[in-house]
Image 1: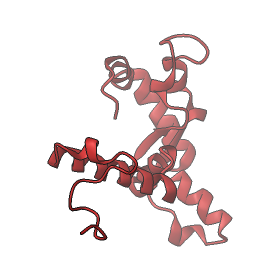
Image 2: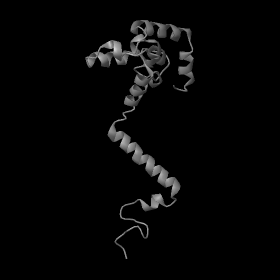
Image 3: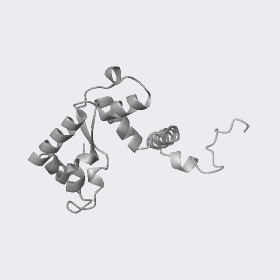
Image 4: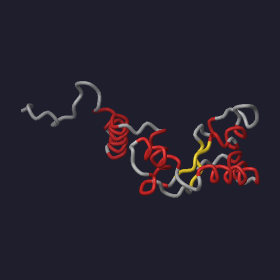
Length: 143
């Protein structure tokens, strides 16, 4: 959840409580993503749909440039059509997809993380990582 005080204020309001109630009633208290994926996969909803516990904003509230206005924070926060009720696993999966955690992105993030860790451990790391520059003794063909 965001630490933006404006967003926190919106979520601590009576209006947010009412909107959550509308979303919960609309979905029957069940995860909307499970229902969507279950129907698309031809799986009977009885064994596939789980109770929804988290309200997820489809268009992120924090992405709005202003607090008011037709596409402001308030409009995004309180629009029931911008909110879906999700179970915890579907909420996690949705946020992972929003951050593009595809295989190539994950690999790139791991590579960058490994480089950062190497630079923390080896003060000469940056100097040694340029093209053709190898530290003495790094080339197994040298004599």
